[in-house]
Amino acid sequence: MAGPRHISVSEASRPVLPRHTKLRFDETRQVWVILAPERVLAPDEIAVEVLKLCDGVRSVGAMVDQLAVKYAAPREAIATDVIAMLQDLADKGFLTEAREKTS
Amino acid sequence: MSEILANSKTDPGDGLAALEARRSPAETFGIPLAVLAELTHRCPLQCPYCSNPVELDRAGSELTTEEWKKVLTELAQIGVLQIHFSGGEPTARKDLVELVQHSSDVGLYSNLITSAVLLTREKLGALADAGLCHVQISFQGNEPVVADRVAGFKDAHEKKIKVAKWTREVDLPLTVNAVMHRQNLHQLPDIIQMAVDLDADRLEVANVQYYGWALKNRAALMPTLKQIEETSRIVEEAQARLKGILAIDYVVPDYYALRPKKCMGGWGRQFFNISPAGKILPCHAAESITGLQFESVRSNHSIAWIWQNSEAFNRYRGTAWMPEPCKSCEFKEIDFGGCRCQAFALTGDAGNTDPACTLSPKHQEIFAQAEREAASDNNRFLYRNFAGGTLETGGEHGA
Image 1: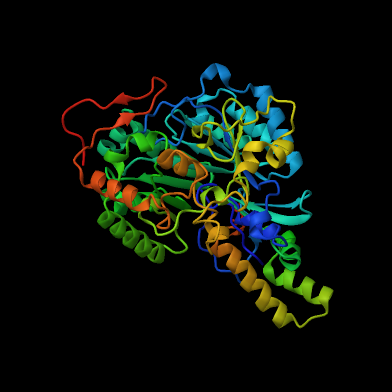
Image 2: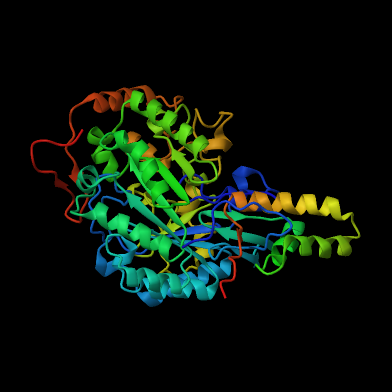
């Protein structure tokens, strides 16, 4: 069955794009797009960078650490922005949580 | 993050508008984000509101597997991102898995728009393995008596429920499409619950649009104004209650709207579809407009050339073609004058203002006629088929 519909994004979450949501570069329009059922989204640069980190293994906390170093920005501010953005995507069904390993 | 929507039914390409926001809405006609591929007009169902043209393409005229694959490759190359496989019934094509696999190979996001009655568990699994991204199943009601009568197909409803469950079992996202009209509007609350129970992601509550087969069946299908007001209330309540559980898209019947719908996002602006025989059309009903010549993928022209340069696409593109009252209307870049097919069907000239608009000189007359039909007790269907339609038999007809 499908993953949980309602995920609550926290620093411990390990988000991943569901199988039916694809992040890809649109060569024709030279922009990154998210392809989802009946929808095409055009994420901005920051969102693309964060989404590329959503591999279902890395935690949100680890992503925030990485981005805070890269942009030499306060960790708190980055965490707030990243969680809000990921939660928004999750609410729309474009992001899910990696399932617990059973083995 | 900017959300943009590319929905082939209600608004086929706000996505494109957002991606090409530098230009005025009237000028935007870059390659569409999504294209509808009508693989065949063959269909086991006989729904009286079918959106296919009354003159259906015969099996012998359908594009071959190799032709479709070439088309899919070309679409991906020119910048189309999503392909909607539709019909008729797309699963009536034996090569559907191959075409879905080819779409995946060339990077197209694929969506299957199906009546579901021909699908098996194995076929659905094969489609998922080939990379199918989304399934949309049409429902004609929430239980077999009404649903099978509308579909003109025995046990259709039961099969659809089964396929919808399989869809979720193979972890494909599911949209339930419910076409609503006078014979099934009373089931709407139960249809919404059915979509929730089926674990659908999305529900389209689409009131019938009256051209082609539906126009022939308007007297049996047209709801009353009171029913529409009740429908809107039910949908709004459900949208609020089911936020985060089920997304509900709602298409109002344009006869009862004040302004016409922005049909196809504007003629030749954000969308095209490909007919079973390979014609490139501004919408799936466009062939109903006589006098327009549509180019085929079998011609010497590229798809991009046809989209950009063919006479049929340019005829009603933008706003320059508009007569009054559209020409000086402040809404002309919002609704682009409504639907060309409806203008043709109801006024005989596709270049007229869509009579759904209250500013159309024809509006009062047509609205009054629709109201009379809605109040009539003519509930007999003309079922859709290749023979030009078959009248429903028997004395008592639903309602």
